[in-house]
Image (cartoon, rainbow, N blue to C red; front, side, top):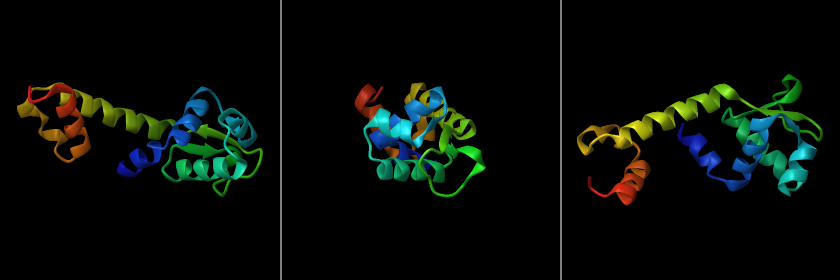
Length: 118
């Protein structure tokens, strides 16, 4: 899961995911909509595919080629959403119950910034 967060930390990759949640897009559409170059868009798509966030059209698992259709991979997005829901629930509990955030210091630090020592 940690690698997924590193991958979606990039604004270009989040922009690509924003496009793909609505419907599949081919590489040309992604290039046109994001302003990325074709090689750069393909690189970001490859990285998204490696962590399981996107699929290549036609069942291909190799590198992106111009015109291939890409789509979001719902099971990975569901797992990410489930993890975030659990972190949100833990963050909303009293301090004594927030021990679940201990393995995620970035979430604990964010909680402290937003809520102080409640």
